[in-house]
Length: 317
Ligand code: ACO
Image: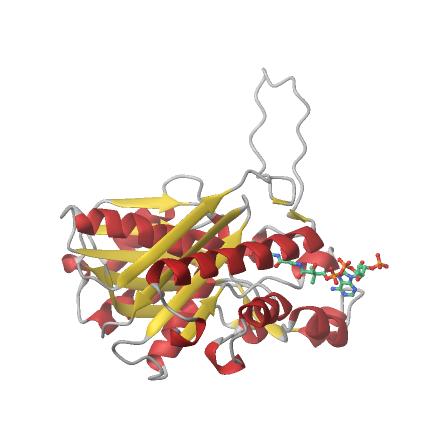
């Protein structure tokens, strides 16, 4: 697998911490100190698929391909307005592709899970070019009356075009069924036969437990991958980590003992945009000209499940 194009898109409505102070018992000081987040972009008049298609088209353009060149689309998404059809079907039509598509839900770790699936398809020649689109609107999962969760999230999309190549050096996926630390149950229609108690509530998160799992598992994944590839922590140009919280990012960086400049972040501008965080940050690095051919990159993400996913790639364009 080789990444040959990246793209991203964010909603136009930027909500600052000061704006949240107007209707929540919170403060810019608390949010900044505990999370590093200063603002997040949230969906208002846009639809999630508009951003997904925009990110996808930008990635295609960056790759020098058109939708007709794509053999498969993988969309990583936790929630959107449609339960069916899959978001990937909607994106396919919007960008004018005709290939098969599938949605996956590995929560915030979705981008690396999608890369793993893409690698398998490319390896056995079932596809030449694959479009990965991560499109997320976690702002619609939280209660905007709950200061513990709503301040953390934003919406957005990130995309990458991958083709056959040898740039994926190692990858590691894990799932541990720890469903009670982070979950969101969607409302289902009633039927005349339902006789079990059902409660639907906005996102529930045990913040401190999530924090602990995130740091421990991400450090474990990265160390295992470095060991497997024979690389030193300092051989890695950038650690592209899930953008959930600046303190989580800093803790991982401190445990790994790497310098600040190797761990880019944009959580301060976008908040946690779930699986879109990694490809959106990668796109920023790519478009800023910060990636050179041969650079080694580590991706590491974690999310509800509890899922974790990490990989080492060599930048090849
Ligand atoms: N403003 C002001 N006070 C707040 C806010 C807020 N926005 N949110 C919570 N508080 C209060 C709490 O009510 C609590 O008050 P109390 O002591 O009177 O009860 C106090 O602040 C401390 O709350 P804690 O939850 O203990 O604060 P903590 O230091 O653990 O920080 C946080 C909370 C930021 C959520 C932290 O636990 C965290 O970052 N966890 C990881 C969250 C995360 O990354 N989630 C998503 C990852 S997976 C995915 O991406 C889907």
